[in-house]
Amino acid sequence: MAARQAVLGMDEGRFAYGSTTVFKGVSFMLDDARTALVGENGAGKSTLLKCLSGALELDQGKLVKSRNLRVGAVAQETDEALSDLTVREVLQRSLARIGAEDEDWRIDVLLDEISLKPEMAEHRYGALSGGWRRLILIAGAARLEEPDILVLDEPTNHLDLANIALLEKWLTLDFKIPMLIVSHDRAFLNAVTDRTLFMRADGMHPFKTPFSQAREELLRRDAANAVHRKLEEKEVKRLEQAAARYKVWAVKNPALNKRKNAIESRVARIEANHTQVYQQRERRLELSDGEIEAKVALRLRDLQVKTPGGERTLMKIASFTVAAGDKVALLGVNGAGKSTLLTALAAAYQPGAHYDRDAAVRFNPATRLAYFDQSMSDLPLDEAIIGYLTDIDGVTHQDATRLLVQTGFTVRRLEEAIGTLSPGERARLAFLRMRLMTPNLYLLDEPTNHLDIEGQEALEAELDGGDVSCLFVSHDRYFTRAAATRFVEIRRGQLIEVEDPDEFFDAQQQGT
Image (cartoon, rainbow, N blue to C red; front, side):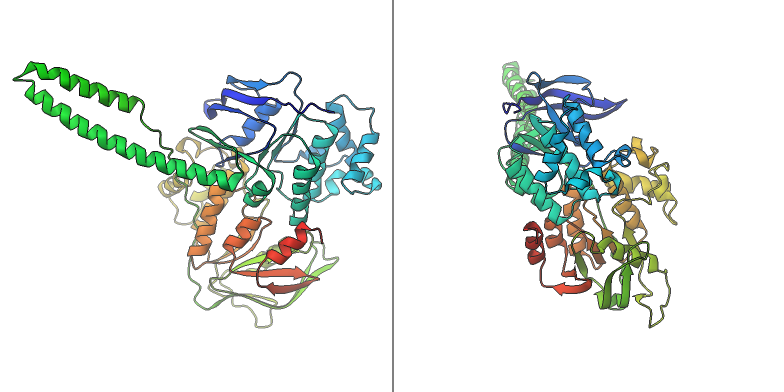
């Protein structure tokens, strides 16, 4: 049995890629809790995890860790090299990491524990759903590698609600080890973690509470610091005015120079120890709210949605309408056809077309559609960040620079290739391009997968405040409740309007 007195942390850690500093001055110490690590996209969370797991080395500072500490880690992105291996071969890699190659029987025990049939061990790993690929890696790291601490980077990515519920059970009930978890899923963090670390440019901020409570406390602290700093600035201004008066009076009475100098020393002490006020990077994630002239943005009638190869019908939609201003959440179990429906709708769109009255998919002729694919497969990874915007009609180099900086990109990075961006930065860039295309109807497939929490809140606010229409798929329970005005569920191949998503969420969590 692995030791449970794990010691892992960092003291004044710094890491840079070339001349670009990813993070600096980072200090923290983990305990035996399940700890959330939260921060803006680009703050360096994934890089920090790689430093903790030993995949990268700090430039400055040091790791603080107990001797022979064993860290189990699952990265955000799955290694494509695993695709052609069997499930057993993938799990054998976990055994090899601890020198237990000859204990293959443990794989069969693990598969039984996570309710997978024994024959699943011989299935090709790449043929599994994205959710089960992640779950197998997490189970292998947590069980087979016998870690002292488990480090997970965005573990809910590609998981449907049933698998998220299963993962929550694993992490809270089955895997009794300390953890460090990076996630932007607020409901998941509140359910799983009991301690929170906020990683910001002004350092690491620890709280011994779950995410929502910790964030409220951090915001209150920031607000109090801002008020205190204003009082300090007011006092400095008063003292400077007093010092200026004594300077004038000292011309006739040199003894007053002592009082002037004392006041100036006091000003210097206040400035040297002034309250630090955190300034969040200004990042605007805005959607276009171009108006749709008629009340109906999209109308479906007698639509059959088939699997990509056309072998099987996933659903039949007798009639369905998205009105101007509707924000519709599309619910359904994994494999029901949610993403397939969005892809089919995007493929049927013809800009400015007047559709036949008998067409299964009819867009309003005034509709300008934008489609966000969760894989962001349309992004040209070799193209420069700024070039991705300047090839839009009417967007100048100056316009693109201003908008990119407002969205959180630094000027020195604008000529870099899109492929150098983190998944979260790619998502922000994709939303910015969509905004510039001035759409009024959005099809969004898992839009929050790679957005940080601030980005998710900005997207929620834009959907709430604009006249834009939207049909979206999301496994993020918090976002779905906050953003949608209507809820429809794919149930037994039919599209059913429901009053709220709670019954569906509850059924998924209970595995029914």
